[in-house]
Image (cartoon, one colour):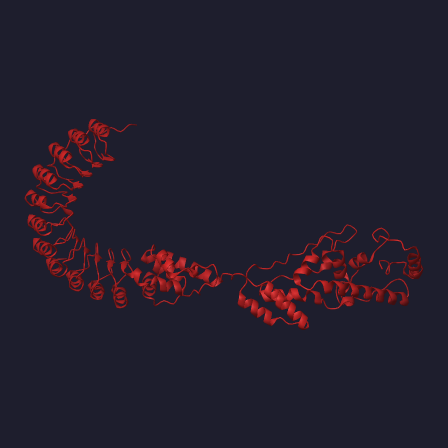
Length: 584
């Protein structure tokens, strides 16, 4: 068969008879051009090829054409019957010794007809709904003789995963070739059914858009308000991937979101998808509302929060300069369970906001409203009347507060544990005495820069639970009062005596001897010498922190002795002690 179309075709009959008689085995690669090489070198790849012509007559051409057609048809039918699936076909064609497959693919299209063998592969690609580039014809993959180069084809890769709905649509849209072809298409689609779905591009784009929206603050007011209240429709679609985080239980996602701040939840997580937005609006996240430092927060936002969230227990609006009394009053009137209220440096707020909180929030336990110039005694009186559960009060730098309001507060709040005043010049010894008498559970007391003297401080000796005392910058504070407080308050662990020039070495020595539980001692800018540091190292076994900065009389000797003798010291502050020499 290999010499049917050779140049000596007119001697075909004689050679055929001789071969049949001798029955010898012939190797076409050594005895002239074979059928395979002829097909490769000839122009027989397209269905529009011209009829084959030889140098012989018309009868020889007809005989050759008929013989080739019959042989090629038998080969094609035999391998088509054995290769019923796209995988078997691909495995056969890519085998290392696929001479017969190459021969079948190299036969002219006019002799073989339509390539029904490869229909299942096309159906498979359509079922997977993935655009796969068409592989080159197998004739191009044949290594031609006469030093021709090997032409490589692009590998046809199947995706690991695909959308189930796309596979169904592709399988339904596939047509062709009868019932056997349809069955093969269905089987191929079933074999390529994915285990998981590909992540959608919309979810990816939504996450990237949420990240960019969280980083930008130009549209802060509209975005924060809309997302905070659930008025904004998320552009992201639900995640359909089987490995998506949304398949976790909602309790786990809520635990993860609990570690985010309000800004991160509103401007980041809530923009990912509608499901995350609903989780970010869960009631447990809005019990503690921390809006500190957000300048886009205004009264309108607080009013909307008050209308939709009635379980708020903690509010922090420190440094929110656009919040007025109206917004705070609206929130307080709808938050009967409010426990903690913080509003540092909100100088625009007046008594109205604090009075509303005192009236509508009887369970209030903590109130920090430092640096509010408009706050007066009227608000403190209402706090004393309605908020008997108060335990923590910070009224530093509220310059219009006087003893009248402080006494009313101390009388009405017997459970108070922390009271801190700073630079309140209208607060005198009368207020200190009121707190010492009516609030026996006090643990932290601070009167920094107030008009307090030793006559008021001496009343603090009755506080048995006192653990921290801040007496910075007290104009008239003598050593005897301090020593008496240290002797009587046995649970004292922190004592701050900074900016008191009356404190001397003798006072520090008594503190070191009597303060058995004292751990922190602050003596910045006090009138002490090396003897005070030596006494601390010698007599105290509990003090861990000593700050003696700006003490001009301390030298290297005192610092060296306390470092050697003290067994509990962990920190020694010597800032601007000019007589201390540091090594080069």
